[in-house]
Image (tube, rainbow, N blue to C red; front, side, top):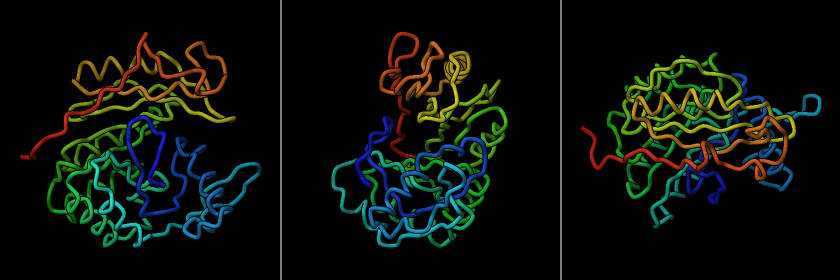
Length: 260
């Protein structure tokens, strides 16, 4: 699971497998179908994590900690940006405090990597990082997902997290987010949904975020239009591309050399 085509990272690392749906942004999560596919391929780690409901594959709430996976980053000598738990959520309620501490130990021992942790549960992240971890690692970026205005409250929890880099993934962007406070948010990723059942993205929703990033000094990364293009027509995400305002946007946050 190391190699990835995700535009804003270099590799994925999955010490946890399995999750559960919490908000509308989870509805068409690619990881659910991927887990089903990996199970069919005989990958035991992903066995029994999903169920069928109608024509959809969905998480069944089973979450599995994989201690064998903890050693993987130590074997990667070349520096990488590593997306942690692309197939789960490290701060899921069924992931133990002790295991989260062990994940942090690995990240502390491999400072040549930059780790990107994205959660839809920033309340737990804020609490545990403040009370369980005890220090701020320059190579650990902490983020939350926001798909529309219904969940913008996650930003306030994210802002409470002791972190060198805080970021937001506005993907899949399925509605306007409105006016948000991006103070102390270092990076924003924006992207539309992909797949047969993808919900549309609107350029004005992207504009809203882009302008606020400019104002706040937040790095802006436009990942993709997804299944719905700028012209509101459905086609492959490859055909719709990544161009926004006449160019691609691959801005990254400034990585600190030390954390005060």
